[in-house]
Length: 280
View (tube, helix red, strand yellow):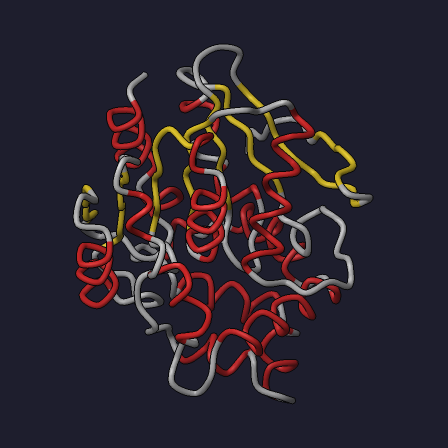
């Protein structure tokens, strides 16, 4: 697997891993989701870097970045991303975010509107409360520890349920992702996030309503929503209409034969949609 060179920077006292590719064009910041890392963008970075200066980081608590004992809420992540960008001297950018990164990206964008050119959300949290029961259980005592501390084979099966074509989840990819997701500190971060942001019914309204009340502020920001039609983690028929209602000017692209990770499952289409939307 062809991957960029790992780079590290200390931000707010935390050592953060990031990738940076591309020498010309606008900055494009990529954000990953929960229990994930920058490797989830490995099929996109080099193509996107032909058009933009692409930057992506392992968010605190995930991947190879530090995992401090902090309150892992949307405000923490959004403020940290802002400080990361400041440390790299990034003053304006396009932003693309996946899954939980969607909610983080929305919070970051709303807090830093003058810096945001265009916004791309891929199967992103932020529009509806529905989420697959697996994540609701992760936040519950005892069972949450069991679900996060799983074997490599169960991790592989779980990851394959998030995609339409299981062949996308190769052994090579699992060998990279599993040690990062299985890190004991990362498991605690996942348990913390799910405990404080979900209940037996789904995502807590108190987590997302503050975003919903501010979406009117995005009226001048072009927004693209890319969603896998067969997403069984964040149901397409629930989240996409909710996004259209909350952000009426959003442009929607649905990818058939695609689950929750479109940038990994359908990279050619995903990259083309992003480049066409951002211009490059």
